[in-house]
Image (cartoon, helix red, strand yellow):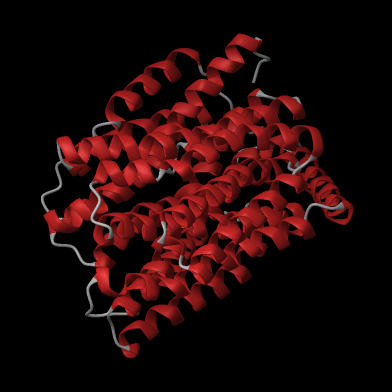
Length: 481
């Protein structure tokens, strides 16, 4: 890709951030609308879980395919296709007549979403070649998540209270169309030097693994063991097959050699833990504020601001810290704050007091604000630029898988604890095990951040990058001959 002027690079960054905004805004707006959707569509707790996880599950399953496809046929082309499909899916969601149709249309949205974030990150990685500029750009990228968390609950609350939950999907339409036109005009085409072949078997195994695992977790509180066990066995079989099959391919969907890099492996596991905490946190908070406290969607959105504002403020700071001092400090801050937030709810029932509820939300917002930039930067910075799409897609997949599992596990724990009782009577007690799980996720971020960001970890990343580059040179030479 030709070197762009500073002004053009900033414009490309802004366009890529628009795609992240509509995807992130969609998730935060949807969470505020869950109680309204539950009443209108007569949905159970598991139905609400599927309204969220149908999207994140498909997204997680297709992100790596989208990343490798973009590297092969052109990032701009795939990015534009994603904008079209995502915008169309949003329109269909606004017209859904029942829960089943909504879940199906959310899956359409996800097909488009899978072509947006990892491809946009790959475009950013190839546009900002200087490591410090790239870290700052990724910090801006992370700040967009904070903007969506701040604006999403408020926008969602206003729309739900004034127009209805269907209007939350209308927000994506003008932003998606504007991003499409700007991409067509200003984003240059780029692709990897060596085309990667499709891996249909690996893709199928990933879909089976994620789908069967999520189904088993969500339906566990409501179904018998004989009904759930086959899906758990299927998930284990798919994982085993994936680990045996992928290393034998010359161009695998998931290049397991990436995981020889301790920072990359750490970033992957941190992403799963952090976004599992986010998915579970938003799910618990939305149901508590509206179904237990009886707040309106707008008032619930306002209560989310103590979490959203710190995320918005801390994300660019984390980007600057990663650029100047590396990922270690932001990860330690993130893990410590998220752990403290979970413990505040698990040990002291923070939701029963306005002061402790406010403090718990602030701590979680600080932690999540610091975690995104180091994940992204660590995942892509140690890899050859030709592998940027695949590496960033693995990081994005880890985020979506984490959010999927977070909603599935936390929703299952909550459903099992509430049982036949009303939310108002039993929510706090039923949610306590869920808060312990979220505290454990924060602790995982803290420990993994400390273990995978030191000198030993950096040496493993350097060795991995050298091996990948050597193989790329050998493969290019064999193709040339």
